[in-house]
Image (tube, rainbow over all chains, first blue to last red; front, top):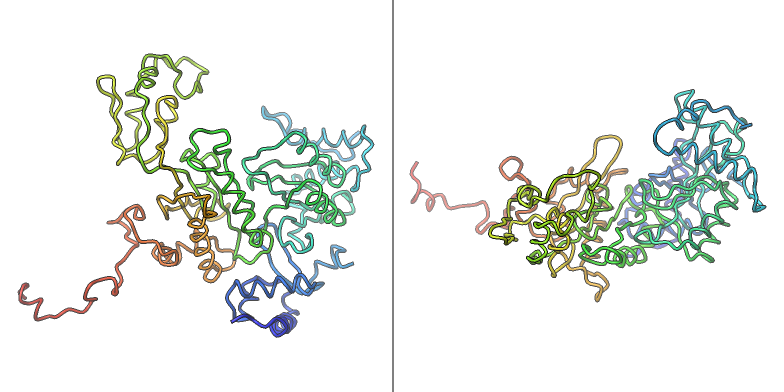
Length: 82
Length: 439
């Protein structure tokens, strides 16, 4: 069954905000687990959240992670929060 | 005078090989002179600062680059790698020094005009330094600032008809050999398959949802010029089903010294007259050839497709006519934990353009479904195969076990019968058994 977008979005935002004190970047599999969905279903939701500017990518070059836009040290420290 | 003293870097120029330090100095000088009056969009002295920070790293024995970043172009989770210097006051030119990966044309075919356009763009909006086809295979643009990223992406996609490559937990930019465009050994059209899958899997290339990186590489024949067997999570290696084609007259020509063996390579010294027994027959790994009474014979059933005989006598021997590819999976070449070669999954797959390579895509997608669900974070396919077993891979891909899947059956059997596959299962009638086997 396809996931309902708005509901899934809220689930991710709540879960990420809850953990935001200790963690600002998450693996894709963490997000899929929050949604309790198959990776391909979860990807559709996550991609749309990136398109809407709710989530942002973080990349080390070899690994990619996701975070709520503007959270974590990086944005401020690198002056990328404008 | 140079902006920063760089004695340790200068020393690197003293070796016998061309040095990247000389290249950097050349570009730094070119930017300083700016004979074409380019309106540089990032600091003019970026390369001096880059050399300065590298010199400092050599002195300190540690890196001065921070790890990763959030920068990218809109909608893409790969292709841009954020790089920031942790000494921005001393080296302001490289405070932001992001890398861009550019999807190289299949087979690395360029026109000079296209290369010039890429270089002009990069000189204008970046450092001017590139890394053409390093270990990743892509065109790498080294060093620009955040505001330039979208500008570069727009120029590339709208004017150069060019996309970014893959980085991060994505499908990486697929790469292939020059294939049938230039090479008579190529058993399938590597460039077409590479381009087709690159287009087909755009979502996987640009939006990361894999546990880690995933690489396709396409070799047209078992010579493996792009080393797919060692470097790709999924290697597509050209092969043939039927017999090696032999031109007996040309074989004689080699034996009589009319043709140079190995296409004339290794000609730096005199190796003496060509000896077919010593240089071909005896070197066949499966000993499936013989040369008697002026005739070359090959027992093709035993041939392991090593390509040695074909490479030595290309005029006389050619791959068969029923061509396709073998699919191997699970290679990786990490710095930690050691390299792993890929394992044979399918000995022969037809590479069929007519149905848009559906057989190939079916295999790819079944593997991805498994790895995306079961793979741990930062676990490559080869590691998952080791952790869950080759048998599991066969199950998820729907491939039946064959002898070629087993390298050492007595030593380490990893394909087991399951109860449902055995007639009668594990249960048996003890009385029936005792009729034939006494206590």
